[in-house]
Image (cartoon, rainbow, N blue to C red; front, side, top):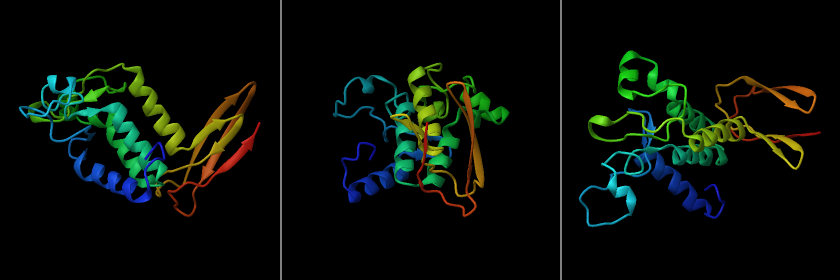
Length: 198
């Protein structure tokens, strides 16, 4: 979906399958695969060395969770992209005392993984992992808010929740500060491109 290699039928089918089989709204995670490899004859490589539900073996591998969100945004599904972005945000796993005791890691950094099976489900894994936080940033800023700079051209291509009436971005370029307000009076959630030349 992200590469643009898939035809329309396959990309919609893939995203529907992802949503039906890998998005676990009850536990707030997007799994890499399901079910996890355990005692199967299939040898997928090193991921089978992890316990079922841990890291790539059936847990949330946060890089891939961000790619799923980016793919939904690229399809123009702003409501879904924002819903999933909010769902995997670490603070959402720590809103209650029970949630924090289950999550067990810092609510202010992005974990590389969240466990996805058995009694460890919902427990955060490796934190302070820059790759996952970079993808979280790109998914939110570039793909949901739609703030992109390409060849010195600022593009705003939002793919936001239809419930958002507006949002603002403060951006510093050189010695200038731009206060950008994006309004959404008609409750749209799909992309609409605006360009600003520097």
